[in-house]
Image (cartoon, rainbow, N blue to C red):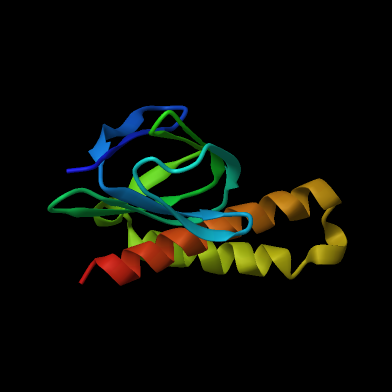
Length: 137
């Protein structure tokens, strides 16, 4: 089988390190799929769904952002955080999303940095909700 080496790491741990058939992931320009022998690439990873495919299995994860690099048939994903769909606490993500949405309604009382941080956190929680609800049946 033609494979691609995937190394997915967060500041805390190595989440994935193995040969895979392909990886779909969110970037600033939209979702891309990296297959074996993909052209070299560096891009920003956006919050959303990252799906790893092996010959016989699919592994969905929620990622919060970071950087990706494709080089020498290896995909390096340096993610701020990554969580397997099975590990997502949907109720907690829903509660956190509601709280962040409420905090963002007070826009005039927030400085630009705080507002931007809250928007980023909201995008991360929404990614968890999307992945958790889609893949946990």
